[in-house]
Length: 246
Image (cartoon, rainbow, N blue to C red):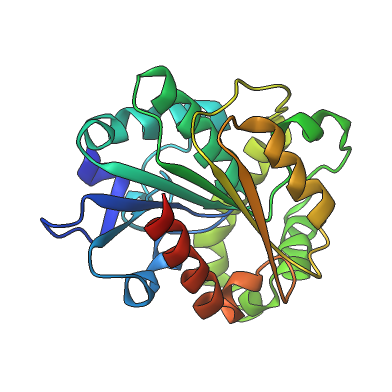
């Protein structure tokens, strides 16, 4: 089950601390393919492989965000018993990572830390009216508003046919996930966002502090919703400090 759900970019015998990375809506595990180069060799780097894309293209999409979290938590259960796990999620991935962290805690093995990026905390979602669904053209326009680097992919009809279903299904999961109050985590939470992100402000990111008993810290980096591409070196340098300090 671990092999189905996780793509290891580094997972050597000596990697007792493992960074588990959760992609954004419409994203793939390969978004994290370069991260092992920017982190110490004793840190494992594994990316979550959502169904319905890349090697799992033929599999059915998750029925919902919380169902997806159930499956990922089950896949991580053995690792969580014998390793220190740090969960990192960007955008939709932050919500999935948080829900997985809660499930691991319920199993008696909370992560060593939760890192959330570019995503509102769950208690603020019921007050937020934004919907991600729409026509194909509206969905693609929304993606490009946040990430114009995908314009070339969408211009190719064959690639567009491959990637659009995953984007639509992830948008559906985001729309249907209502959030709300959640149990407190017995793990510190580290927040990250871009200073020009139109999806979430630094003030909203600070509300993740209300979801942990173990402390919260926010880092704001230059850029918009996908600040983490141009600022990958700075982000990984900060994650090095997180991983060495927990």
